[in-house]
Image 1 (tube, one colour):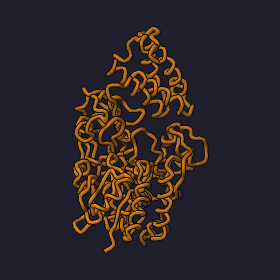
Image 2: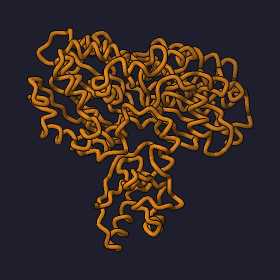
Image 3: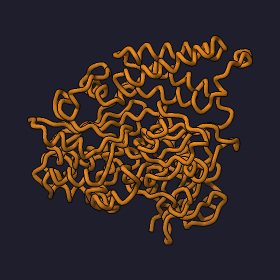
Image 4: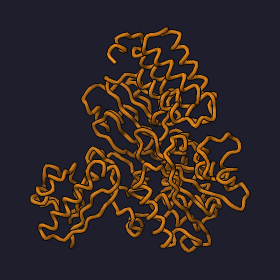
Length: 518
């Protein structure tokens, strides 16, 4: 039997040197005259172990990592093609603690199969959800998704089934499914992992959404900074079309659904759904006022479902295993699993899919292993650059939409950025305002002007100028931005600013030494 060697080819692993490792493995195979098949799979998401090389043995897959090109010769000398021991030996991948503790539903295939092999996808349970969907009435599909409790994994947490039902119930000769893959938050890479490691699950989810709502055309809007995801998704769409998964007769049924990939130009605000729609239509990425809701009047004025990658990629498991199966995971109104992306100053960074309900402390300390520097954790930002900073005193907060909202935080796209005790929270608050000022589309005054004034006011605070007056002014600006902005960019910027002021007041006290040090 020809040995199979798995070397991740997704951009996360590539950034850590996977291509150099693959080149070294090919050279070593050639030099030793060994015939083997190298499979460029996606990453399993344990990025602190990447590049992680796996080999299929008679006793199952064995992993090694993080592998450097200089390790390759000694790996072969140690008999790694048959699972031999080596300093980089990790054993069975699913027994690695970081992976063993997870509940993988949406990411069940990530890192296991060849991302562009439809046969491999089907052999691992793929297309079962779509097969069930084509045999059902649209209303029954919508009902199943609604009963599962699936909520938007892009930030707002809006129930997916309600959005789908609105589009289904709206009469129109044309409807659309739009996948928001404009993943731009700090510490987020779940969308990219799915698109590069298991693209067919997203295609399957979009096809189910189309059948459920009467939409026959879909678009995936991917940010331009994701060239590997764009390339993989384009190839996967072609393969799916040729295999009859997409087209005029989806899986041989009377249902028609096709899709295409569109690339954004790098504006953060295009992650907001109406701004994304404008960009898709070839217009400037500016936020639209609501109403009308996109579900009623969206892309090209037609009823449109807009979901993010993880929401759509979670649909196939619901249609395969049923609503009750999915709803059994989680807590409160947060059902199913969530791919938590752990980054920043953290020992074990990567993607951790689990049911809602783990506390922030368990995620940072137990799963993440604390800071990479070994220093105490000072703050954790959850939800990207617009998320609140939580101190250790709030580490008992369960990962749940309502629990975070109750403490003036948000889950967002479930990205977690960890900071140790050297972080200056005044600088972090300033960064939030500056980020908003740079990325604002400029349509509404609270966001456009408020963020610029916010930077100026925080600079005055840093300089020790009238601290009480300027602290009150920042608070007032945040209040205006939170309730007066058209979209979440201006509306959520107050979260990191006010949480920094509330939980880390010592960093905002007059400090002439701060200016002198800079």
